[in-house]
Image (tube, rainbow, N blue to C red; front, side):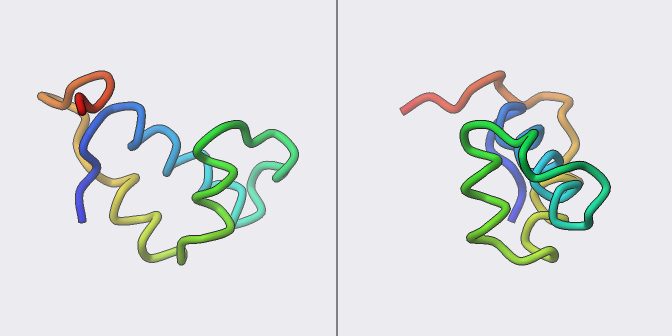
Amino acid sequence: MPAKSKAQQKAAGAALSAKRGETPKSDLKGASKGMETSMTEKELEDLAETRRKGLPEKKKD
């Protein structure tokens, strides 16, 4: 499942880094904190590897 916005892709990357132990979980803020606990490493990889070119900065409702 690809990311729908640049913000979602960045948050997934931060959560993935924390899940792997590369960065401390205490550094997570906002959506990335919830993503780290509720998503598997594979799901986070799918979101984080999405190309950012052409994505909106934030998803419109």
